[in-house]
Image 1: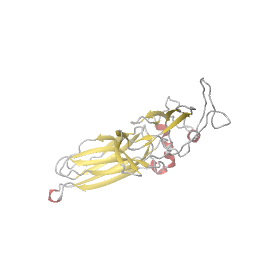
Image 2: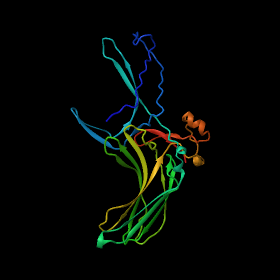
Image 3: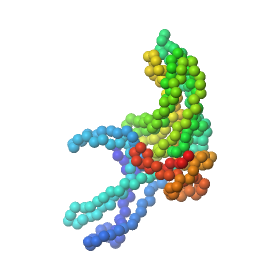
Image 4: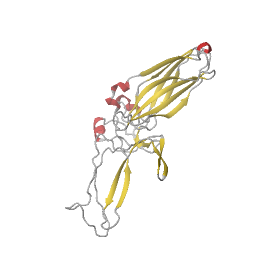
Length: 292
């Protein structure tokens, strides 16, 4: 499914009429667009899908938001000429507009390892974060508590997930980053401190893209290393990824040597905001990245 967000036509060739004949030579015509304020960020999904057609099968991303300009020249009595040039849009997501994301967050879960007479005890787990709103470039500090009341050693893994929900098809859960932590022996109850560096990511988007929502979470997954129980115990923390950090965290970052222009509304509102740099994500799309 393809949907156009907006389409603007501009006549760049000056003249009174809708068309004008050009004599041979070189010409330049400056022009500009005013993008809608609600324009979502450029984004390309990490997953791919295949579509069949008369000329064979093509592979393309499952979802994307792209922008480009197209120039057309009408050639009388001949073939028209046209060319296209893509450009990227970075929409700001100011975490200060979501005050709850500055508060600590936690999630807990428990399960019995094994089945019926093969049960080997209970696992209780909790994951805590110092906040639930982050920007690319900073580290999210986690505290993990696991009470291993079973007779099995436990494999512990922490994942940063991007969760996409398409409006017209099934969604995806993409693992952005995965860290395997130290194994937890039977009967152990030792807290684990862990930090996740936040890579360049498109900001959280709810009800902004016409066809997809983008969310993030940190997932704690615990599996018994032996026995027949292969169902993991999962604790998930919802994350909001922005590109303007909490004001209380400005001091954590250093100013980038790249003098990228911030949106005027952000620059005026936060004159002491450390300037981020532009960094590409896994799909080659640029975004704000802060130097921690």
